[in-house]
Amino acid sequence: MRNMKNIFIQDQARKLETGGISRRQFITSMLAAGVVLPTAISMAGDVLAATPNKGGLFRHATGYGGTNDTIDPSTSNNGFSQNVIYSRGNHLTEIGPDGTLRGELAESFEPMDGATKWVFNLRKDVTFHNGKTLTADDVIASFNIHRGDDTKSAAKGLVTAVTDIKKDGDNRVIFELSGGSADFPYIASDYHLMIMASKDGKVDVTAMDNGSGGYLLKNYEAGVRADSEKNPNYWKADSAHFDALQLLAVVDPTARQQALLNGDADYADSISPSTVDLLGRVPTVDILETNGTQHYTFPMRLDVEPFGNHHLRMALKMAIDRQELVDKILLGHGVAGNDIPVNPSMPFFDASIPQRTFDPEKAAEHYKKSGHSGPIQLSVADAAFAGAVDAGQLIAASAKKAGIDIQVVREPNDGYWSNVWNKKGWCACYWGGRPTQDWMYSSAYTADNQWNDTAWRDTESAKRFNEVVVQARAETDDAARGAQYSEAQQLLHDDGGAIVAMWANFIHAHTKKLAHGDNVAANWENDGNKVGERWWFNA
Image 1 (tube, rainbow, N blue to C red):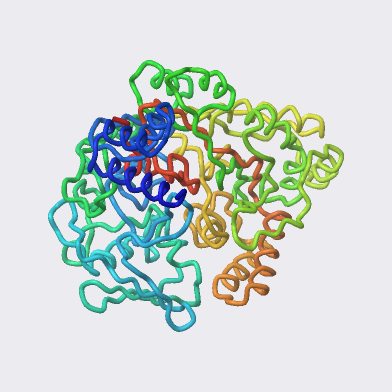
Image 2: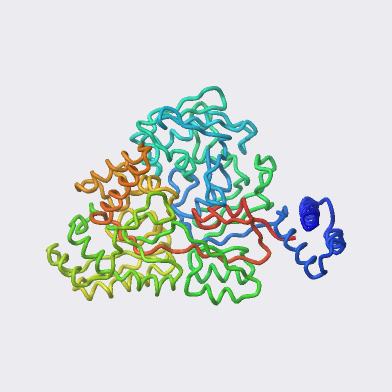
């Protein structure tokens, strides 16, 4: 009898969810089934809250963006442009809200010849915003933007292994690789690798109508705002529920939160840990916190003096009180880093490497061996992450205990990612992280990558690291692959230029009028930076 009752309730819930019955009819049917009135009302609310509603203007205040941003996916370097990419475009694959990899523009994909080839079978129902139908030619042209010696793409390192791309008819693409790559379908979901409409084998990266995503980009002001309208022909029938999106670059944390409280925004990301508890007490606001692969770093460029000096790098790594940063900057919303950009959420993580802790005596020893004297400049701005300026001051204070003089240089927020990061010798940085070790290393640590922000390429350890990453990429034996990734972690830990100081939770705040599915992705903030596609307003 109980099973029959449950089946009846589930059937009525499905009818309410799909519009087959009204809320009143659902409550009446629950009363008839023996459910008390308060419970029936609550059940109706839960069902309706989980049912996507269509319509409305979604206003997202983001902590990223700069006046040097462009709509070119290949050069995207912050969360503002990434949100624009995911709202106006699609990729061959995507990371779902539950964290699993799934096809997007590719219906299916499979390896051949020991994963030295990957075949992607394309959907046949996809139309770009300019009216062109998706074909294999568009995929080939879009990937070729990132290949070649002259490319400025930040994804160059991700596709270096691609030796050729061929089509087998209009809806089948074959990638040939220089070696086996079990993770290549993950790589294909990287936000830089957006598939764009092509013409005569070329893609116009400046065009606003060459995407196939849920929203059509109508207005773009770099570092200010992006306005989009719903794509009426979107091939994902169960996504892109809003009528329009308004993405606002509000880099200042206080202004961003105030925009939400004033009703000028429906959603705000990168909420400061120092104010999240107070913000959570506001009755109209919900706090969403997810933990994944986001980490805050202080990259030291080996091609800028004095950071090519191994002992100096080790001195700075040991002169930082990481737990103090977690306690005072993240206020407990994260954990201490260990100078490797991978964590237990990734396959083949080696937890046996001892956690690096604050050790002023050893820091002083290494600093003495370095032969350096005088101040060392550290460039910071809260554009890097909320609290980066304060973090710089804490680092300077802890290093002083080791006899190291750090001069904190406060940089402007605007233009930070184009003028400071990946240019100056030592600065603050954030990484959203990647789901696999190979993807993370290929994004920022291999020698061939534009985003190798430590310029860690020419030391013996760096050369060995690059060899190991290639070997692990092609390895099919899990034990051997695990050993290779352990070696890669150790090489980075002992010689690399990145100070991975903290793993930070993603903290967001939004109006209670917003709703989302059962799962919220943590591969990036903002539900995988697809909040505009996956969320909706309550009725």
